[in-house]
Image 1 (tube, helix red, strand yellow):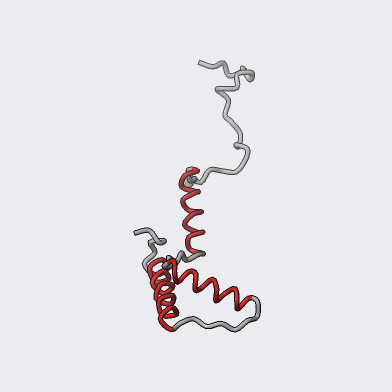
Image 2: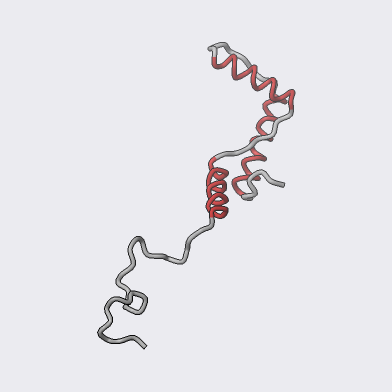
Length: 101
C-alpha cells in the first residue's frame, strides 16, 4: 500500500496526458501500406501485351510520326492493336484484376 504523503513514487501516481498523436487503432502494417500503394499505381496504368510483329510495326509508325513523316499501318495491324488495347483496358480497369490472370 502506498503512503498518501509519498509523492516520489511515479508508477503509482496517475499519469498525465500522453504526448504525441493519439492512436486510432487503424494503423496499417508496412506490407499493407505497400500493397495499397501498388494498387494505387496499378490503377494509373494499363499494361498491353502485343505480338512481336505488331510491336515492330507500331514502333516504326510512331518513329515516323515523331519525325514528321507520314506513315500508315495496314488495316489488319490497326485492328489487332485496337483489339489488344481494348482488351487490356476492359480487363484491367473494369474487371479490376490488374492484368493478372
